[in-house]
Image 1 (cartoon, rainbow, N blue to C red):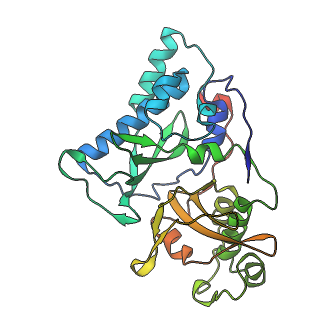
Image 2 (cartoon, rainbow, N blue to C red):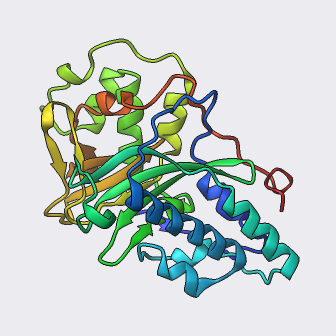
Length: 299
């Protein structure tokens, strides 16, 4: 398994923004924005509170609005802001334009928030926004009392992986699948896997698709995490063991669930029709963001 490298955030959000450098949108290539009243407002409120807490060093406030996970404090800046800096931060957070890029989903299926914006516990949504010049992907989950920001993917950007780690196996599989590299796919999928139905069509020529696969943050799935596949099939994480694991990767705004089995000492990814899922809401002009510097972020 990959190991998270802990470090101190000496500059407000500097290492955070390196961790969050997922995708940058060009020319409004993702235009869908799901407006669902109170649920949308409460989810975006949690995101704003999370950003404020991270940049101001407010660990208590941060922990109230995130889904608990290991090493989550890594994202909180070690800083004491002046009153003027706090005011500037508040203003920057208030003007964030939060766009929901995927409908609310519960166990992989679309759901509509009920009265007063209530959703089933475990409902997911994904937002995209810009903060201090950098575009961010922000996943949220509905907990028992409120919407929480799922920071697992941001933490994963700090991971140091070995070639034999399952997270690397997932990225390799998706990279080869996007490129329709048959011989390489045979090596990273279980013996006897039928790849025919997943390799239809031409490989995309845009480098961005491949870059997103290489840089995709991958986390071990929580029991029950799900995704919808074409034709109504639901892929749900269940029954993990030392030789059978489930992971979730954030590919742009898409949370992809992967099932892996250990075979011959190596992790193999069970193929699914991920290309159809990736094609939903994506656009060839989606580009991988460059690593930002402090001046660009206004720090």
